[in-house]
Image (cartoon, rainbow, N blue to C red; front, side, top):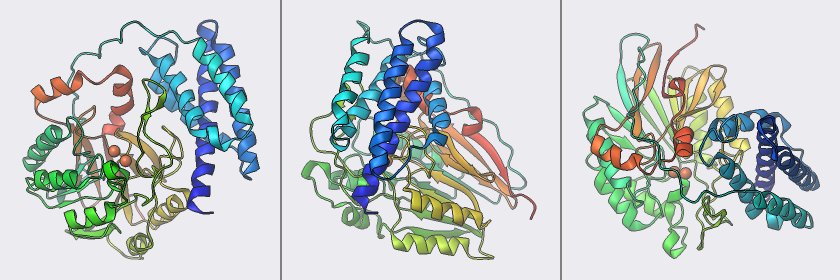
Length: 440
Ligand SMILES: [Fe+2]
Ligand SMILES: [Fe+2]
């Protein structure tokens, strides 16, 4: 299937999953008060319309993914209505996202979709004042014991978004903390820039020049298009900023491999940015496709990683692999065929861990028979930090570390809503874990 066809199919799959997840949420909430049953019915009917549209494309809905997506949603907005401030409005906004994105791909079904959306919107009650964010509370680093003597420590620096508010200040603190951490190398997870412009690449290169350990960055979707002049200039700008083609790179240090994959898709998205406060698209052109993919040289690189007898490897990419169950499900992850390729690479037994950015949260995307695929949160957004990994002969210990500058954190916390905090933090097991190679 071509890229456009695959993207539209995955968009409709995602919207079906969102409606099925919302129906599940409202059905659970219906035990706590009236009105939720009719919202559940509405979401169910919208899911049926989308399943129908999907059927026309020769595809069935992903019923097996509903439980995971619904659990993510419940975690975010609460197991009962009112548990999380604005939780009900957020769940409704996900429905607005569905409508806005899918309207031109579902033909006649669109009018009924909109009617059901209008009915839900009419029942919403907006507060007069937005609740203030919860108070500052530092995040404890989860204590983890490396499995044996540490051979090397490396740092993972998540998405940076240079050019966006707060990004440079947060990056500067992360850089000085990493310089003091004893890390021997640093891998960055893409979205180096926010709007893909040359000024942002220049700022990134200049600021990252302060890092003492060697740094390897990768391309994220935000780096693909220079938004302000709408040019697909990312490969060129990225290449001149970081001195390599965005086709992946394999590094070896002390007998451990670091496979850094530029999973950004070099294509424009048909959609602009979406505003969750207003429930509409933000005016102006959008960025790159949010779906990730590998170029042919990156497939070759994965074959090298999987070669029999090859050294242990960590794999880094911008997009979490499938099944991606947060928001937007499926669509925000690495495309399915490349996720399958990654899975096969991990099955070689050479891969000790997979680390992804893009989502700005601490989360375990999935396990491959115990080998974790882990999303790493970022310095600019709650919970504001980076990760350190201590590698031994038998495995490693991973921990997320919050920035050390409390004055900066105090300032940044005042923008982090309750929902945002529930989204980004991750469980203690997602902020600190130990992995040990199983006996062969
Ligand atoms: Fe990002
Ligand atoms: Fe991204």
